[in-house]
Image 1 (cartoon, rainbow, N blue to C red):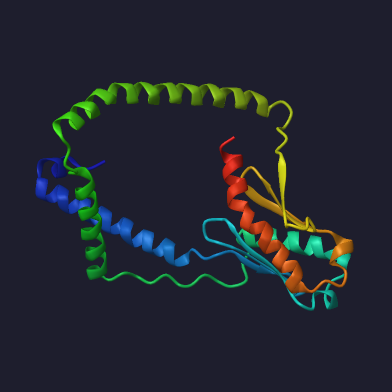
Image 2: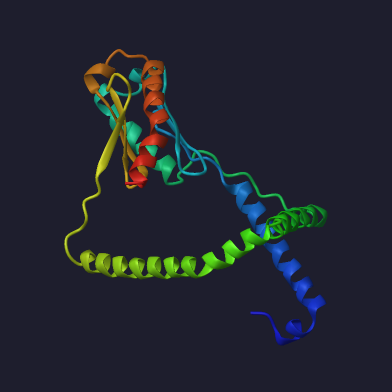
Length: 229
C-alpha cells in the first residue's frame, strides 16, 4: 500500500509508480538471464536430454557408440534417469550470470511498455461498440462469479478425496512411427521414455535418436488434446 503522503501528491505518486516499474523490469531481466534450458548428460556419456525453458522436451540424444558404455538392458533406465534430471533442473552447466541493466536501458524499456499499454487502453471504439462493451459487463461478472463458485465446489470435493484413496494419473505413450521408442506423459508433463530392448541391439545412436525425434514432434498435439479433455 502507498502512504497517505503519496496519495495527496500526484507527482510523488507517479514517481513511486515509476520506481516500482523499474524494479520489476530489473527483476524480469535478471530472471530471463538465468532461465536456461534443462540439459543433462548420463554418467556414461551415452545419453543427453534437453528441455526448453518453457518445460517442453527438446531432444533425447543417444550417442553413436552407446553400446560401448551401456548394455541394451540399461538404455531405457539411463534415458529416464537423465530425462528426470534435465526436467527437474539438475543441469550440466551453471546458468549465465545476470547482467544489471543500466538506468538508460530500464528507462527505455519502461517507456516502451507504457506506450504499449496506452495503445491498448485507448483503442478507438464506435458508440455502438462502447454500448455493447458496457452491456456485456454484468454478464461477464456473473460468469466470473459462477466460475468462482464452481472452482470452490471442485476444490472442496477434491479436498475430501485427498484423505481417501490417491487419484490414479493416466500415462500416455507417444511413439515413433515404428513403435520402437516412446515418450511417456502424465498430467501434461513428460515423465519417462522407453526403448524396445531387442530392437535397440546393434542399432546406431543416430537411428534411436531419430526415432525419439519422431515421438517428440508429436508431443505438442498430444498434450494439447489431453489438456482440453
